[in-house]
Image (cartoon, rainbow, N blue to C red; front, side, top):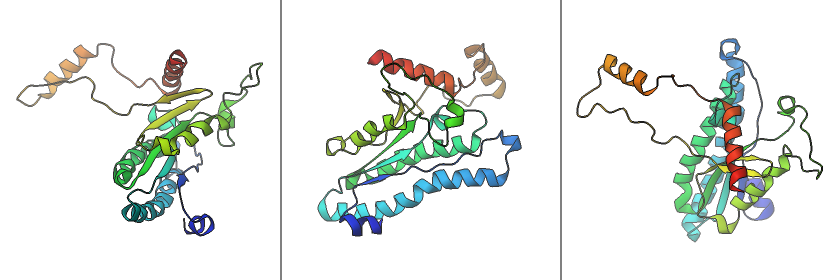
Length: 230
């Protein structure tokens, strides 16, 4: 942070984007593989943000607003779930929560904090993507450059009222994702549930059971929504 300020005279934008993979099913994962991924992703966000926040807090107190932006990098693996990535997914879900909380903490100082969940072919993900057909017009939906517009837009002065959000990006589609929200209510009224009664209620309300859709199914639904909205 100090080098950036000394070089450019100010600090306006911080983009947190560093990652590694150590994919395994949890029962085969070593503690070192868990720790490495959590440290690079989650602490890798917290450490630079800590120092940027301290600078912007003082600037905001002195000038009324720091007028700055932070972009974090989450992932659908953490937001929607992906088997074999419990370490990566936990870190990325943590980054989404981190984004919301730091946005709340810094809003008074004029700092926006948002996150993107990119779906793109990079050195880290190229094995998972494999070959993706490029349309005749040459547009590659897996090109990492497709994530640049949302980053630039969120860091604009005119976007200072948009904070604490997570955006899924693939190709020309951008979905503003919704986090945990109130769903089905199972109420016992003014008393506490008895386990057997609650189990019966669950089975009646969920006759076919309930399970996460998984990342691919959720991404397909999100992509379809974006395309319909366009």
